Image (tube, rainbow, N blue to C red; front, side):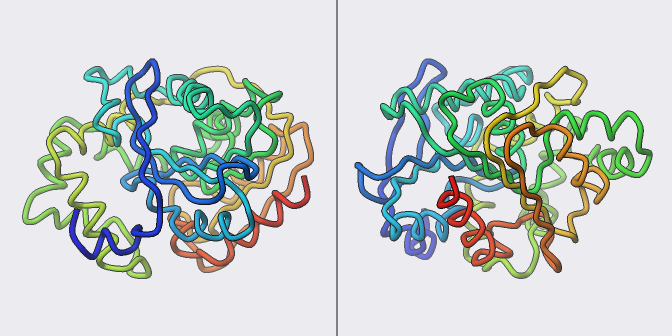
Length: 286
């Protein structure tokens, strides 16, 4: 870890969370006695994408923990592609909470982390108090859109290069130029460098890409009964506006959808203040 990367997370506590799947690395903030919040990061990033939200949650008395997800934690890096299916990631949520001693907790997820969080919230409504999903719609809404909406299918098919054999070599060639180009300019250079350095470690990028290779959204999904807020950036190139709005059909509990203007896929970092404000408001309301 570079000194500059270490600087933006210096005030966070490092954890190692041992589960049946392996040991997850994590960062945490806030008093141990505070209301519990688990935050799941998105593709090509890691737990420190939530630095701003972790600090804000801690300042408001919450106990917030953000793990590096399976594949991103070296101690939970399955060799087979099937090990990255969303069902496994949803089980990780429950096992991590068990190891932390959390009976009930609030769940937050971005991108692939949100996809896993939707499933975990549907499976464990007695444990998940609230859900805050960012960027990724409910998997059921996404699956339906892939079958019925050519526009959404084209957006998803645009990512086929990430599923192709040899994608790792192309992304890491020439100093990882293509990989670096995946983040918007609004995300600080030192943070992108931190992500690229981590993904350049042996096996890390393959694990990250295996999330795309393992999940084709052809399974059946359950609606979410817990209070839910869904944040989506209007400039998101992966999820269409129609798909984002259709998520309302997959939540049976109290639900609020917020479309953020001028924001793309990396909502927690592109719109740190707005994301944090929505998260704190949602938690306070429930």
